[in-house]
Amino acid sequence: MRLTDAEKAMRDGQGGEAVAAAMDLLIRYGEALGAECLVETHNVTGTVTATTPFMRDFALEKGGMDAVFSEFSLDSRKVVNIPKVKAFSSHLQLGFDPHHPQEMGLSEEMVRFYRKSEAETARLGVQILNTCTPYQVGNVPTRGEHCAWMESSAVVYCNSVLGARTNTEGRESVGAAMLTCRIPDWGFHRDEGRRGTLGIHLDIPVETVEDWGLLGYWMGDWVQERVPVITGVGQVPNLPKLKHFGAAASSSGGVEMFHLVGITPEANTREQAYGGNTPTELRHYGARERAATLERINATGKDRQVDYVMLGCPHYTIEQIWEAAQLIEGRKVNPGTALWIWTPRAIKEIATRNGYTKIIEDAGGKILTDSCSAMSRAVPPGTRVVALDSAKQAHYLPAILGVQAWFGTTAQCIDAACTGRWSAA
Ligand code: F3S
Image 1 (cartoon, helix red, strand yellow):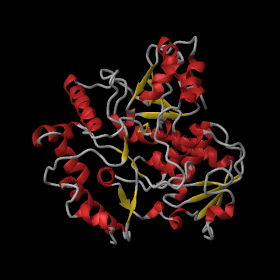
Image 2: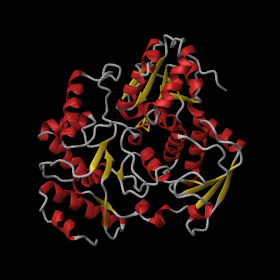
Image 3: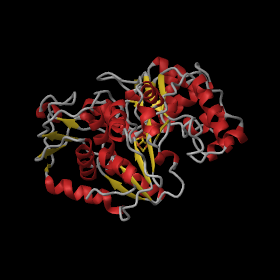
Image 4: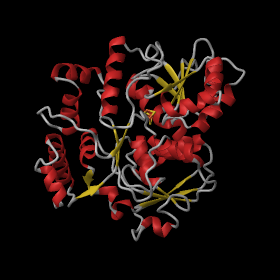
């Protein structure tokens, strides 16, 4: 791999042992990918804290968070002192909501450890955004900006909606990028990796969050890791719709980038989206595909009695919390059902200032932050049946926790929370 003088100096230890270990990792990783060089990045998003009891035990046994960073973020057997990060870096979920540890089933000891782990991460200079949607709360890369992001739903949003450039990185590569401001120049960092390769034409209007989730789930299943170009889009989708669309596509498949012709930054026209590629296939999405996808997502839903309504995957926007507050104001959550809404801490703060947290809590629901049910395996005790407005969460929760899932609109979910029953078709 071609290295600049500055990169060679980092590799040779001029920045200290941790930076040398990070460069070593990036060189090995880049060579395995077939990258010819590294690209500079000043925007990294990932997880570096100890997020599981196993990591907590590892930290306690091996000497703290430097040991965790060395082993799990730098692939270094030797424990090296971790300096402050060089790149602007933000943290994904932490693993617990500091205000609702009991609901999440966490012991006091685990809470103490999480708090310590978070404080040490902040001391490294990593922004404690604690969300899968960093683009909602202060990390909004610009078009063409090279990033190094983890979290599939954030990656597809970063590439497709913002026009910034990232592959789906892992804990190791983001740790190394934080210390070096480098990442292999490969895949979605390069123009040729971003061009569309196959097409989808919409034969029906796709308008609601539910519609976009269904389209994304259908699309991901078909295109897997290819880059689709979508034509026939009517109403321009907003942030929540694009968030749900990408998240669904990156769960049923591995979609890291899509082009919505006339809407997303690199797809002003169909020709621009393909960038000279000839589409290998074209499929139509119509009423039949939509109905079959809804049936598939709801395949685990059998019992109509709902124990838990989970909203906020990916983390809810303030607009979605506003909608939920309007839907539930003056109503009460059914005594046998729990309503939890997940959002970034910063958005909960706005929701509280606007009175939405009170409306939701007065109704018997809760707004939680910093994590989610799938990431933390946190659901109310005894949960067997869940209602969701997220195709991504409906994909993962039954697989992770063995629960039944119903997928529908936010209004249907709020109705399920208040009546205790899933009454949508
Ligand atoms: Fe975010 Fe959890 Fe969904 S991390 S995208 S809310 S599975």
